Amino acid sequence: MFKELLSSIGIGSTKVNTVLFEDIIERGKEVKGEVHIIGGISEQKISEIYIHIDSEFHKYDHDMTEFPDITEPILEIKVTDPLVIRPHEEKIIPISFTIPYYTPITFGKQTVQIQTELKINLLNHPVEKHDFILIDPFINDIFIFFKKQGFRHNFESGFCRSKPPTSTNPTHCLQNFFLENKDGVKVYFTGNEKDINIHLSEKDQVRNFLITRDQDLSIQLSKLYPINK
Image (cartoon, rainbow, N blue to C red):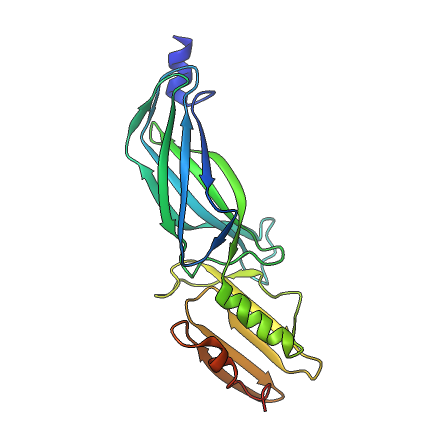
């Protein structure tokens, strides 16, 4: 009877661990891994298992509430349909998914997390959560280019803020990068988009350059002015 009660409320029973095969994940590429489900002291009926890719961001600059930072699921992946896990049984479920470009990359204090969640008796039970490193070589090459030109990130660069959802980014997460050189030339762009619109500001002039992933990056960057004269 006691074991049945534990099972019915989902306490002290099933354990879940999600394992990704790569330590560093590349945005826009397929991610592979496994979900390990380990039964506890009693048989457990699991309605569904989900994986969430989450990121924390600041709601508004003027937000004075006690909790200005919120966490939002960027991506949700359904792992399995209803199943029964027997006492001490282990099930391994292979997973694969692609992290979209509107997911922010890890940069400075900006983190990305993966959370595994069980649904038992129509209730959600977050059971496992950890950070992972998410990169984008395309964005990194842009950083390298500007670093060679004498630009440096400011303290706000890469930190996510809240925004309204759009057709290209259905989340509330906006990751902007801000760079500046010693002459006061400023560069800023949104990093969690597939193609990157770079804004180059010098004195009272602002120029925009669309950098796309389907064209040679070095040729596109060489056209920036006044960095390359």
